[in-house]
Length: 289
Ligand code: MN
Image 1 (tube, rainbow, N blue to C red):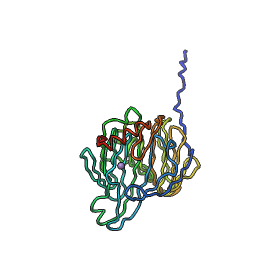
Image 2: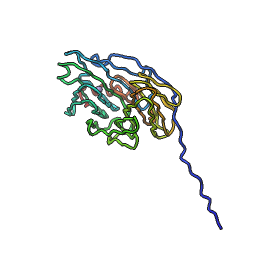
Image 3: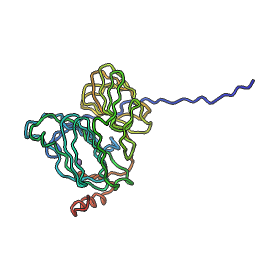
Image 4: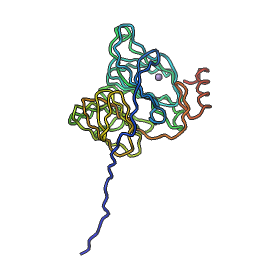
């Protein structure tokens, strides 16, 4: 009798742990709206350039503020609304309204000029505003791509649910549920709500930079607690296990390391100082968008 010995193949599970916890601080942005953002960002958060939690703030009638007309070049802005109403309008003629659960994935590419404001109803009546804006960097070869929008309404946005875990998959995949958003580089963006005592195992490709932004309650990852208002940067690995020590809410963000120089000035993010000067000149000459 001949035995054929097959090589034994295993799928190595590498569990991610918390590498660094970055606290957040509250600042005023744009026309004077309140955001909570990590106190240190930059290359730590690559490929994300910015993570702003807008509010939560309860505006009195006539007091709601937003970001009037301004330009962008070289990256993407992603707006996800939890409460309130926002209206966007841009130089390409696109216009739309964001209500709770809606996502706007805007690729500025070579240039766009847009306005991001509360709706006139919200300006007049006031009310609660809460949401997120993240900036996703683009690799050099895509920085000057044609601008594009992807508007995904709450009803089109896939939800995964399992044993005390609720997850809206804005981009990427979670618990077998996949988003339809087409991202330039592979991005994972998931909004998770967990009941106290529940557990989530989320697969993430080994080399992606991964992070968790907690905005309610407290979670634990490999023995480290991460509480409301903290950004946890994760070590590399194939999976992250999250235990909810309290009823919690957080974002899972992941993407590849772009590994290129970053030249940043206000609303422009390029690779070199020359490209920034070009962006400013193009804007001043009215040819950015
Ligand atoms: Mn903007």
